[in-house]
Amino acid sequence: MPPPDNKRVLSDIEIEEMLARKALDRSMFRRLVPLLGPVRRQVAAVFALETLLVGIVFVRPWFVGQLLDHGLVKGARGWTLDEGLLVWLSIGLAVTWLARFLFAGLSGYLAGAAALHVLNDLRIRIFEHIQALSVGYFDRTKAGRILSRADRDVDALEALLVQGPPDMLSAVLRFGGAALMLWLMSPLLLLALASVVPFLVVGTWLFKRVSQRSWAVVAENRSRFTSHLVETVSGVRMIQQLVREEPNRRRYRELLSDFDGALVRGNMRSGWFAPLSGLLNAAGMAMILLVGSYGLLEGQITLGQLAQSLFYVMLFLGPLQDFNDLFERYASGSASAQRIFLLLDTRPDILDAEEPVQVPSLSGEVEFRSVGFSYAPGVLPQVLHDLSLHIRAGEVLAVVGATGHGKSTLVQLLTRFYEAQTGQVLIDGIDVKHMRQSELRRHVGVVLQDNVLFSGTVLDNLRQARPEAPDEDLIEAARALDADEVLGRLAFGYHTQVGPLGANLSHGQRQLVCLVRAYLTDPAVLVLDEATSAVDVHTERMIQRALRRLCEGRTAIVIAHRLATIRDADRIAVIRDGQVVELGSHAELTALGGAYARLYEAYERQSGIVTDGQQELAIEDTSSRLHAAAKL
Image (cartoon, rainbow, N blue to C red; front, side, top):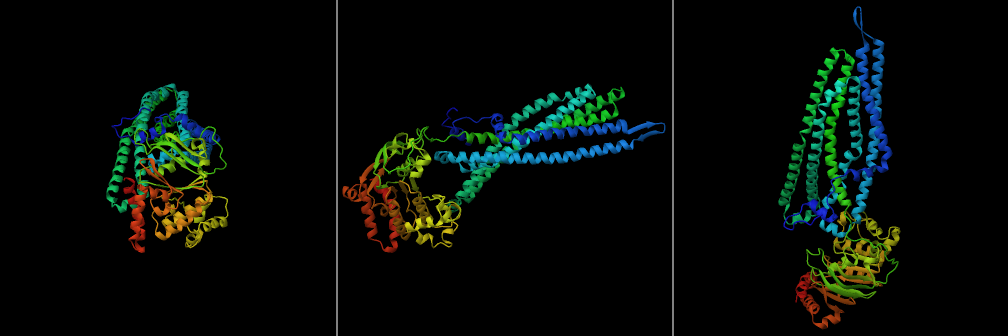
């Protein structure tokens, strides 16, 4: 698709088109039909049942016609009723109703089963695709929009994809069958109805075009307020902390108002089709009565045939009402399908090499060689500028620097969540671009500041690192890191429910779980990104002991603001403006008298003048001092 005008604010769907690197596909038929492949037998059975049901519907007028033409017999003493014929016709009519009840139930069951199969397969396909997308996609896309694609938009396909085709077949068969029966009884009857067909064709074409565009706007506005709701739920604490409830509520109301307006406009633009169908229905009935009465007087048709023709008129024009609903389903469903396939067409930014290098084991030597990187090349400035850094296997390297100068970006590049635009990132001399991503991340363990736990028990979260391990091995790993002192004392020990995202645990407890989980993966390279931030002094000391054990025998990259976390490292790298400006041991950098030395002097001076009770505040203040020192 062409590049957007930089002066114009992009809509959400235009942003998605940019991420997918293609325009929205308005033609959905060729994309939707393959989804029915796994349930083609059920769909064929539903089609057969619908055809049978339509045939049953056409039998009923025949019973009425037979009753009028042969059930009433004119004799010498007037009209008499053939009661025997009436009984048989009544039995036949009852059988058709019973058959319709049974076949309609079976058709509904098969259609429902097929719908579950198709939609669940589609949900799984979307889920797998979302998991495979690169991290950059989630940085640029609202979570609510993704949820809307995987939930509401998929639901909207049921009426279109599974129920729609049988209903459309039924409408077409009733329409065509009624036309055939009218032709067989009297061509004039069909010609009388044919006068309304051009109006039907033109109206249907216009309705399809208007409705599809209108319901696409409705679906887009629905995604917006859903996205806002998800963001509110995720950030409710910050909203309350900043006292932004009222502005946030107004924003949500505005989004709902936009949705309501789009819905009303969509209904106004497409609401004319139902009255048009009703008008055509009335006009067709009038034409049949006029032409049929003339044919009856002329002896061209019988009274029974005239009565049958009135039923056939309803069967001929009735589908006009169904087409209204069917095309609304198509408009709404195809709008959702367009967005689903736009998501599925979005390719990951980072792909595995066609022939990735197999690395069953690594020693852990890491090198950043002349690396340059920007999160949005050509739009945002580079975060890293020709950065080079070599980390020996088994070495503990601490990285310090002000926020925004590129420390955490090193983690993103090493784990290949992002890729360097220039230079290379290597492990054991192998470019990470040549490794399979899943294999690379098994060799590189990461513990972040914003640690993530999933609903379940502590053991459930530990078992994610080693799914087949028995409980005893998991608990033994916690003991090896001295984490058992804390985790074993939880309310229910290792069977304690951690809650959504670990909400039932303190920050320090969550961090210990993450450290044990990283220990269980036994990575060759361990990255600790702000692993001891936001914890008290006692917990920090406990985590420090766990970190020392965790780093033994493996390469460790420690990114932290707290100098207590890093001064025992083998070497320390100071990052400023995306480059390594100082590199050496604690003693070497202190003797150098540069940015690190000034920072450490400030830290020691602060630590020496405070009481033990104020120690935590002194350590917390280190982060802000780091920013000032790094700029000197």
